[in-house]
Length: 567
Image (cartoon, rainbow, N blue to C red):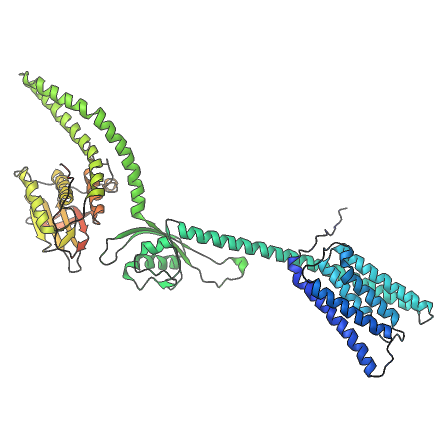
């Protein structure tokens, strides 16, 4: 049959440092009480044995010396001579006091409880049981000595000694188990505390250095915790000290609405929002929220849940994606430059020389097809190489301020002059004196790309294409290129501004991508939407590409672009 055993594990010394001092203090108090009892007996004219008084006084001195010089560290819990100054002295003192008192009117045996408790709490189970066994033997010896003196019923004394010894054994065993449990609990609490401190330190370190913003909000919209990245994304209105309220700043309303939705639905939420501070360009953020809950085991079922909000800068996410795509495009551009342009030039030149010697109409038609397709390949290769030029200008173009209407009028006239018969449309300039921060050459490139794209899909009416500008009382300035083309398929609309994406096989798919890059460089935003427009022959639905500018109050400046894009 399996048997259960008690594993002797010495109690850890640090948790019992205070208990060791408490026991030493208790010994001093017991010595003082014994000495005071002896002195009180002398005052009351009772017969006091000088040996009892001397023993009590000696015990006080020994207990005091151990309290002063031995309170630093508890002894080794295993049995040994290190326990003689404490447990050994106590047992010897009680036995000596019991022998010295002659009248038998005072019983000192209850004082054996102090060394037994000390051994059970501070020592091993062996020390506890050994101390109890020694005390029981002394009690039996005392019962025998009394019997040898012929006093009283010996059987009753032995029975009383057996009951007392049994009680001491039970007390020693239970006290040791409780002490071992206390040691285990304290060690577990210390490990949990260390784990909690480590986790707190790691969490704080991660919060300080993580690239994404982290906010912790309560039901009232108070920000309990915010890392530096979140404060940077929130803008200058964010406070470095928490808590602060989101709802007091209008630009943070989308974040507050998402937090309320998270609390209301009790489900994680995610959304892409724009934070717009006055006088600054919009900040695009991808937000994900989670709701914390109290752990059932913690017993804090009424604890208020918190909303943890992660903020990702869409510009950085898109920048990483663009970096990867542009790296691939750079390699492709190099291959195009070396492997396609030179052979194409040779093909075009050879075709022109061949065309001079041809007289048959069929052969002439074939030569014309060769020239058209070769020119198409040249345009595609130039568009691919143009990406590198645009990226170079985005990084090196100086900032400038220009009058929107005047710049748009000049670009519109230049665009029409290339093919006046075909490039027809309406021009509506309603921005007045609004100034925008944009490079003039870059804005001309954006307009040319949007107008060429609209011209490709517009109808036959003179007003099938419209270029307009507008400015609102709130200071929002925008331009729009509209054409009455057919609606775009949803699958096409999702990828409009991606490089190399086109719904036509004859297009390189880089025009709208270049427009977006140039707009983002100057803090503007470009978007597509299906919009209705009132024309002379009625209201017509069409495709609208809108550019929303970052307005400025600075006077117009002349652009000093030193590296232009050739179209």
